[in-house]
Length: 187
Image 1: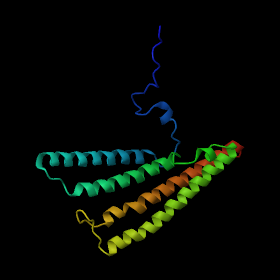
Image 2 (image 1 turned 30 degrees about the horizontal axis):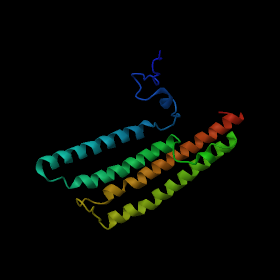
Image 3 (image 1 turned 45 degrees about the horizontal axis):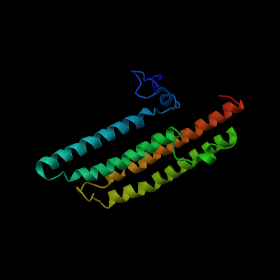
Image 4 (image 1 turned 120 degrees about the vertical axis):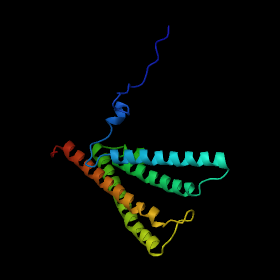
């Protein structure tokens, strides 16, 4: 006689995520819901734009000229917002052999070092991309598809890179607190 199949964790009606995933988020000063809702809005906008373009193509044999340009912008923005969420949740790419090996103190220091390097990288990108935005604005560059000012798209790069840098600094601080708590220094 066979036993009934084991089912996965049951979901609470109030929580859209399984308990182990929901519990995995560390408390942060700035709510992680910002990135989550931005992701939902961007994905919804992408779906609506694409669906509208499919309908127009199907019924008229032509398409909206602006949809491809705007979709590419939204996909890049989506990747940046998702990168911010990954940094805040400490789920960015790492080599597990080095990150998970060794003593707890070594792993915490590597986590802090990684967060510091991510912060440095994205602050540098934010600073350098301000120049790109300024050049787009100053030289009145227009987008190739629909001719809107290019800085409408490029302004988001320094903003989101700065936000990712701040999320990395927050991760660095949280990892430092964990180390002190484990060493018995204090909260």
